[in-house]
Image 1: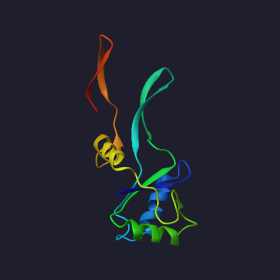
Image 2: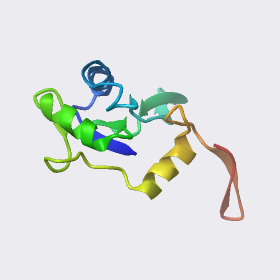
Image 3: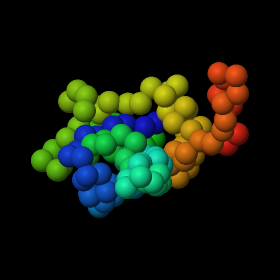
Length: 126
């Protein structure tokens, strides 16, 4: 199951490193953020850019939420936990499933490609 931590925008990678450093392997299966590919127009040209999909948020995967919550409480000054004092906020099962399907194991949402015909969009990839 996935849980959410909040951090300052731009500090997601530092938060992931802190989670991996301070939380035990029993409590934390993985720590990650979601990245996405976007088109950005600069100097009259479209360029691909990689950005945070959810700026200011880090996701934790754990099969032991009780232990994860306990360890997060020990490091309260380091981590800002969303949710109550007992457990961090979990990602709903349906949302987790959709994010897994869209972003895969790499937690990366690539650009979609397609075309428009008669007012209908057709996605060919992504």
